[in-house]
Structures are given as C-alpha cells and as structure tokens.
Length: 320
Image (tube, rainbow, N blue to C red):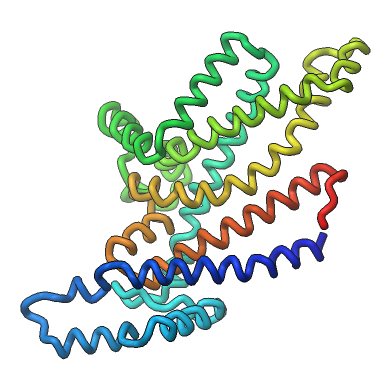
C-alpha cells in the first residue's frame, strides 16, 4: 500500500507541473495585466515602469515561471507562494486564513450528501418502479440539471429575501462572532446549494449499485433462508453495494472545491473560493495561481483517496 501511494504521488508530479504551465500561460497571456488598475491620467510613466519592475512583469515569461515554480514548493517559507498584488500580504498566509471556512463548507456539504443520498438511493432501489422510486429519480434529475450558481441565487432570494429566514451573506453575524449556532445558520443556504447536485448524483449511483447487488445469488439465498427483508437489505446487500460508493467520496472532493468558488461568491462566504474569484477579477496573479494549484492538488489527492478507499473496502482489489 505504501509503495503504491508513493508511486502515485510521484506520477502526480508531472501532472501538477503541466497544470502549473497551462495555468501560468493562460493567466499571463490573457489581455491586460495587474498594472491596468493604476493606469490613470495622474500617474507618470516612470511610476508605472517602477511597478512593473516591482512585480517582476518585465522579465521573460519562462524566467517568471521558473522563479514562481521554484519558490512555490518551498511551503516552509512565508514568501513561498508570493505576495498579493493588492495588499502585499503573503499569499500563503491569506489562503491559510481562508481555508478553514472553505473546509467547513465543503465538509458540511459532503456530510449532508452522504446522510441524504444513501437512504434515498436505497429506498429507490428497494421500491423499484414504485411512486417513491419515480419521485426520487425525477427530483434527482432536476437537482442534477440545475446549475449550482442558479440554485444558489434562488435559495438566496427565497430563503433570505422573500422569507427572511436565513442570513444573506457572510459566515457570522455582527456581535455573534464564534457562535456555533450562528455559523450553522449561515451554513444552511450555501451548504444546500453546494450539496444538491451531489445528492442527485449520489442517489442515482447508490440506486444502481443496490439494484445490481439485490439481483445477485447470495441475496436470493438470504431471502430463501427466511431472513427478514430489512436484515438482507442492510446487512448483506447494502454492505456490498457501498464498496464502489466509497470511491465517490474521493471523487467528490474536487467537485466540491470547484463548486465552492461559485457558492462562496454568491453567499459572500469568506473562504478560499471567494478569494480566488476576487483575485481573478483584480488580476492578482499570485493568488490566482495558488488557487488553481490548490484545485489541481485536490483533484490528484481525491483520485488517490478514491483508489485507496476502494482497495481498503474490497480486499479483492490489489493495488499494483
């Protein structure tokens, strides 16, 4: 197992380098630059040239890329990920400050997905072609089809404006900083927005996995022995059906990170996603690059976690 993980991590190095090259090229070759916001009639050309030299934008792109890449891996140094063009703060510290909020949002959405999607999938499989199955399948299709940003806007409008039940923005209310109940109340809308698509996909996947297991011989044998239907479903069928479902946890992590950027922007959730969206709008290159690389690392680690979890759950799977 340890050897397999080590090999996968080594294989991920060229992938992450490729992500870095593509991201760096797209960002720096896009029209405009961070200096555009300083181009006003009152600023002199020599001042602009000074800013360009300060940011290192006067150097050739390969030299800029190599300088950035060699410092990026030195995470033990505060200046490893560069400094924000907007406020001059170390990007590493800015992300470390925002990361807990994003992890809280993503973990809550993942927990809600697991708690809701698995029972719905089981119910749809056990009651195949029933009214419950058709209703769950229809709702799953609708939930999967609605874009997360559109759903977020609907939830914000109806839950926060029309009904006034939930806060419109932020993570905490003024004067209630650190209150778990207040933070939980702020989590309701963004977590719902982030989890609906995942619940829709997971419930369909669990249904398909359960149906496949329910038609296998060992389940028929368990019924023939006179075991209660509930015991057969949850002890025998579900235990085997959840083996492939476990891999979804690792594969869901990258999608939650990607969706968090949109969700955090809609609900002004103070996480890494909101910071990344603001950085793109302000052309804060060091922050954008760090944000993209975090997403790439999340994809690699998520796929690795999925493979390892599958092998751990099913001893028949051998990691080569």
